[in-house]
Image 1 (cartoon, helix red, strand yellow):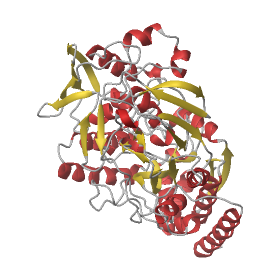
Image 2 (cartoon, one colour):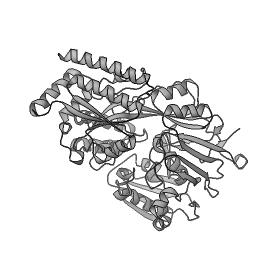
Image 3 (spheres, one colour):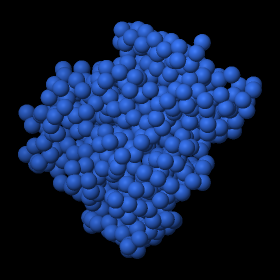
Image 4 (cartoon, one colour):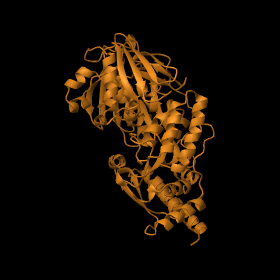
Length: 536
């Protein structure tokens, strides 16, 4: 069979199989749709004493796994729950594209962005009555730096060489290298301050279920992976707290949106082009986030002792060149998504024409022929690990068909999502469908974690000095123009190394009922409810 006929055959299989899966009720891919003009919810007013009361129920894509430090990083994984209990030192404002103080009163940097000075608000207390101090902030950063904590913020926290207590309300952070986007650490899980005295006296398992924080809410009822009920904190520094919050898990965005339509939930976390587009087309108000590289395939470059074909960067390059992202998007979402091979979305403020590896089946096949010549015992076999949800299975079938057309011989291996996540972080895979969640506040933070040795998101196990240097240059760039130029250099190095293959950007949409006011967004589609109230 010729290369051309092999490609035609594979694409026919892709079309037939995808249509069959769609008929069985499969959802869309993790790509994004363009906003359809749906407006954002009202943020102009906050809770006041006369508005106290009511309950707001939120349908989660995935629940917060634990209140242990550093787990509430991403809105898609329960960060809203964590932020409600702990609050955060800083807040990212998507409208102004700036960081703003929250628990902090101010944050200032040295000229070269290597020393940052944080001043805390006076009079803030934790829910147990203890004052929030600079010592608690320094203790929290050290917790995130400790690998035993297993914090999602570990890579960023490791950039802090020293968190020095200047006085009870002032902390000075000295960084290992210049980092213009350092506030992202304090606006994320690293800014959820842990009270040192209470934490050291607590049983870790009990803390994970019933923590003490400085946030607007306290835990009332917690059933892991099912339901969380939060009650207002009467001593919250930010003023009165109006509603009771209830979080429930509803499998799949479609189910969450249906629950929103029937008012079972008043706020819902939606992810995926089809459901998000449906909500926007219906005029449902919400907060939209376009996530660069939200749908990827991680390629094992040597993690956990893996020594297979993907340790050869030519094989990884062939993998990336074999994928027709536009075709995948048409088959899976009907063209609603944002297929791309670049690490940054066109909608990003950092985008400056960067391009990833281009689809070229002939070049992919030629690269594989070189690899096979050097590895005569390898016939193209490759195992693709996929979570067993319909949308992920559809993506796996699409990717397999295109890879096989280029000369790979792919076997799909499916497993429950919890097992897939665990296997990714232990290196027990060859190729695995996943995603990144870089925030447009500072994508360098996530890229450093995903593409440098020791990074907490470096699932491929990549260790390339040129890639590490390019990431460091992006982090150190002092302004937007310099960051765009540095990102262009990083994209070019990425195109050679290919630690993961980007399939599409991702779209997240937190839909909000008209009766809910005062909710505000921050990093990674995380919602802040401290000012929220119900208006009947």
